[in-house]
Amino acid sequence: MRRTVMFNLFRRSGHASLEWVEVDIHSHLLPGIDDGAPNVSVSLLLLKKLLSLGLKSFILTPHIYDEVFPNTKETIDYAHERFYAEMERAGLADIYTHSSAEYMLGEKFEALLEEQCLRPFPTNHLLVEMPWSAEPIALEQIVSRIIANGYIPIIAHPERYNFYSSQTRKYHELKEMGCLLQLNLLSPIGYYGKQVTITTQYLINKNMYDFLGTDLHHHQQLTKIISYVKSGRAYKELGHLSIKNAELL
Image 1 (cartoon, rainbow, N blue to C red):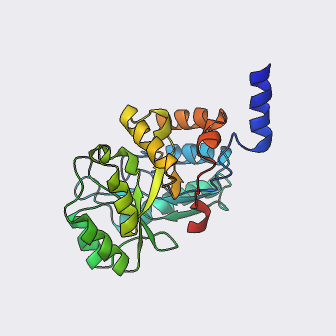
Image 2: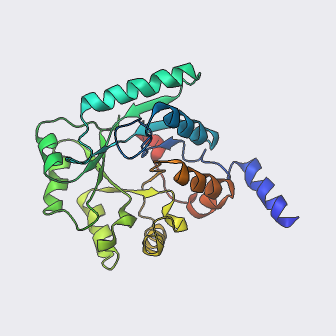
């Protein structure tokens, strides 16, 4: 009985939803251009489920990663047009979506930065990620160039870079450089492994996160997200953070 009462309390208060987040700033919903949704039908299904959790707006962030996912303005715009057409058919034309990207830091990114060919958020923030193997060479200089060009770097899922896990000072250095940090919604619950969960808790305890994103790719992740949110755990564990997602539109 007590468990039922608590669940109903979470439901009534909105704590069993993502209404408090409002905007998902990191997802792979655009169809067929990276390792996210393979087609528009799946894109629409994922979107509807996220809407049912209380999210209201979406910044779409397909990978731009050298030869692995060599997306361009044209490929992203085309995928977004197809997605929006499907949204219209489903009666969801009023849902705000903005197509940006998740940039892998490296030579390709630096060339795009030099050529001013980037797709920032409406607020000129840029979502960037690092290779899983090691910190990019001359990271501080890259960040300085990003800022000098008028952008604000957001480091995607910093808790997942295990090369930082034994040197937590690095996270503080990222903040000192001018980077903001985005937490993946599934990181606190062990989806990416025990070490990621430990690092996530460290960053939560230090109140170092600025943004929260689903980083949603597929239905398996969606199932975990729904369970985490509907149980009330997501709000209980993360609702106290100074999340500023709604400021990015």
